[in-house]
Amino acid sequence: MTSQLTKASVFAVAALALAALPAAAHHGWGGQAKEHIELTGTVEQAVSLNGPHASMKIKVDGQVWDITLAPSPRTAAAGLQADTLPLGAKITIQGHRNLDMKKFEVKTERVTYNGKLYNVYPDRD
Image (cartoon, rainbow, N blue to C red; front, side, top):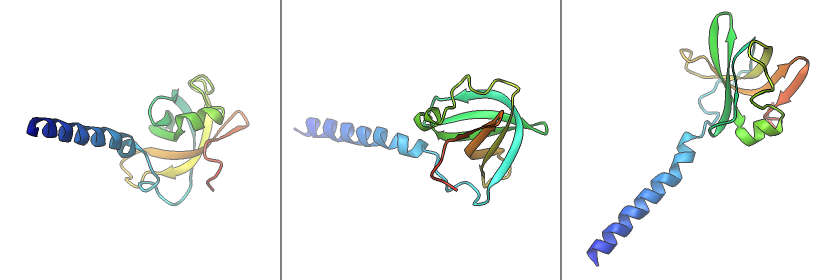
């Protein structure tokens, strides 16, 4: 009986730990500045829809920035796919910079390319 109880306890703890992983990996807004930032640069790494949030990289004045977009399904629904923004394309992003000024990362709400707006967070200002 004790052996079964121990196995059940281990299983329960493991299940809870695994269930918490997506929440721990979620990229909330708490680490971002309240002020909006707008950057114009060139696409260095195409949109990736892998992971809990879509992402890409842009180069602005020689600095590569990590661009964190909405969750992948929401980003795709806004029209951003891996092939939407060609490498080297000039784009403008709007969002909130990471509070850690050593990190060149923006949690992005909008992307503009070639006159088209991709609003990945239409419910945010």
